[in-house]
Each structure stands twice: as C-alpha cells, then as structure tokens.
Image (cartoon, rainbow, N blue to C red; front, side, top):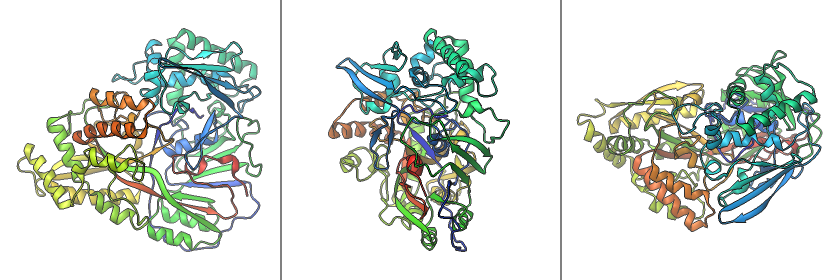
Length: 613
C-alpha cells in the first residue's frame, strides 16, 4: 500500500561485503517474465510511512504497487503522470495559493473499485498536525505517539496548509489552499490511498469485498473525515500504523492489505527471504507496462558473497549495492552482466542524541541538553569520528574521486553554492589533521571529565546497524580513533536497527539518509521540532525559524545563505556529521532492458513499467 505524499528521506542500510566468488556463467534464459532483484536488507513492513518503518527496501516494494500524479526519474526530474490525472494552480496571491488536483475518470484500484478524489484525502490526515489535533488523534509535536504514527507530520505541508482540502461536487477534484506559495509546491500534493480498505479492516473484514461495499466504506471514511469522528479515525489509525508491519504473506493473509493502483500487487512474502509481486491485471493508473514482465521478486541476501554467487548463477537479475573495489572487479568478470556505477544521493552520517524522542523515556545520557556540557561533548564526539580515514579505507577504493569531508547535510559537493556554504557554515571546525581534531576533542572532554584518556575513557553507547560488513568496519575505525579523544564507543549491533534509532538507550547512531526527491526543505525534518526524522530530541526554536524560510521559493544565493545560518547552529550544537556519499554499483542481467538506476531512494525501481526482456 503506497501513500505518495511528499518529498522525504528514507533510511538506507546498504552493505558492502567483499564479493570473492566462484564465477559461473549466468543461466538466465533470453525469454523470461520474472525479474529477481537483490537487496541486502529484509523488508520490515509494507508501509514505509512510519518512523519505525522508513526504510528504502520498504519503500521500494511500495513503489511497485502505487502511483500518483508524478514520479521522479533517474535524472531527478519531476515527471507528471497525466494518465492518473492533472493538477494546476488556480489561485496565486501573496496570502492565498491554491492547487487543484483532478483524478482522471475510469481509473480503478486492484480490487476493481473506482478511484476518486476521496482517495486523496488520506494525505491530509497523514500530514496535517492541525487535523490530527482537531480530530482528537493526538498532537504530533507532543511526547505521545498520534493515532496515525505518520512520518509526514510537521514541516512544509503542515505549516502552510489552510483548512481542509476541498472536494468537488463530482468527487474527482481536490483543491489545496496554502497560506503562501511554497518551494517545490508540486511535491507536496496529495497521493492516492485506498481508504476503503482501512475502513474495512478497522471494521474487522478479512478479505476483498464487492465494489458496492467498498464504495460504501469509502463514504464512511469521508463522513468521519469531514466530521472529525475520533473513534472511527482512531480505529483506522491503528490499522494504518500497525497492520502492515508483517513480513510473512501467504494464503491466510488479509488481501485488503495489498490493494493498490500500481503495476504490481504483493502476493507472497517469506520473512527475511523474499517478497513476490504479480502484475496487477486492472492497472490503468500510469504509463503502459512493457507487457513482458508479470512477476517481480525481491530477494534478500545479507551476505555479499552469496549475492554475487546468486547473480553468477542466474538466480538474480539485478544486484544493487555498495560493494568493495574487489567486489567491483569480480562483478566485471561476470559474463552476460552489465555493470553500472555512479554516486548515490544517499549519505552516511553520525548523529548525537540531545533529549528523548516523542513517546520515549527521558534521556539522561552523556549528551543531554542543548548548549553547555551537552553541546561540548557532542562536538568532541563528532571531532573524533575519523572521516578522512573512513573515506580513504572504505570509499576511495571504489570511488577514487570521493570527497574526504561532507561539509553539509543539506546539499552535496558539486552543488552550485557549496563552496560558499562550507566556507561559512561552521563545518571547518571539524576539518583538519585527525591528530589535531583528536586533541581539540580531548580538551572539550576534559572540561567535564578531567581524567579522561585512552586508558580512562568516557563511554558512549552507539547503535550499530547489523548484517553490514562496511558498517562494522566503519564502527571499528571510529572506535579505535575515539579512544585517542577520551571516548569508549560501546557498540550495540542490531540487525533490525531502524526502529531503535529513537531509543533513549543510545547516545549516538550512524546510518544513511536517501532523499526521495530534491527539495529546498528536504533536510528540515531531521532537525525541526515535530519533524518526521527528528528522533534525537532536537528542540531549537531559533533553528526552526531559519528552516521555515526554506519552505518558500528562494534564489540560489538566498537559499545558500539560509542554509549557512541553519548549519552554523547545527555544527555549534554538534548534532550531526556527514561522513561519505554512497558509491553506487548495479549489476544487471544483459538480457534485461530498461534498468536505469536513480541516485534517489527508489534506485532501480522508479520505472518498473519500462522493464522488459
């Protein structure tokens, strides 16, 4: 079930095992109708829209089963999907900006139910803080988890939407009103959601119903939505937040979970092994399918050697990961395989905790609180992460042109204005010889722990993503260097790490963010109060006010100036440190056509309609 709402980040968990394999000739037949796609990480949910399930693999599976008004291609271009519908600005004044979104007639969900504008309204439920509060569903900015545990609350949409979206008399058009024109406004529109399935599951239904019953259920949602019926909406929220968090799908699984309007529908899944999707025979919401592919299988193989062997054996058609230089050399030797390289938009970063995340017990650890001791120790910790050594040993062998430092978590090196940004945003504080950085860090630590040293270090509890050799190596390098700065990094290796990011148990964690679109306010959710990715208790009103400016259209100079102001605070508080851009390597069966890896989070699955043998 895909809820296309707005631009966001998905968490990446890429592996990089050395792929020394026995190279065999691929066994793929030239005429096939099945694609088998490798992923290092196992699926954890069929809803990637909650803080705990915001993973790239979850969103990739969802990508195939849902489509809305637009998609983003491998060049980061926003492409309108006019098969689904159209949208246009209908009012554009300084204080009143409106866009009308119209669904084309004749489109249907995979269960045959016609799609209309009511199916767009779930986006508002999942994105508007005000609606959640007014409907008695909880305040997303509070310490309590709202009924819809959505990653979409806070930020540009919630801050700027005015009132309820207006449904036309024929129920095919929804008009959004914003208090002002917002940057990247086309990316904040509504996406389709089969709301009737949520109602039916909340009412206890266990299987597909008739179209008549489905439309009646949708009417019940619309009534609950317009009257803000707390009881009905809460029951739907529980389904939305919890029912999709399964990893096993068989004949006894409720088919209502997998109603969609994409080209493919989930038919089976085996925990930590695979997910299988079959072509949706009723698909008519997007670009025409090639016609040759009827089955897509995601195969989860954590061990890189085994994955390469499976590719060599013809058991995989697409290998997509971030392997080592040795792995790239091995993959190049495979016959009948095309190797595609590049730089991914995913970036590795280390984050520090400030306070408890919403719904979590108090955090009283080493880094507690803004300013003072907490900020000093957070800065010391980030100074001790040996970014240059990590890049030289783990990334440069794959990408010799990799930048040694990421001076911003908002934009990447090479972006227009990047040099002015890093010269003024405070990132230079964290740049220099590692010996000098370690000495600077140790001085900060000894302000509060005068006897701190390599033999008497201060403990830092770190969440370490498991099933990932490169992350293990990254942590080992960080742990060895941090001792020189008086820190003892105590790693807790967790295979299922993403739901644990928010836990007060950890002082720090590291992983990657993969943007699903390129927007001015794309990183706001990581730092703003109420932001969907703010799980470290950051609460800085001055920073929030600066980041709010990124919601408005800005020229490049004003954009960079705004980021400079924001990142001066971020760096002064020691909140995060970018470590490296992920190098991308995709190996594809030469008989398979239409694979065009994207640097964004959808990677190889953004254009499933083009695939063919």
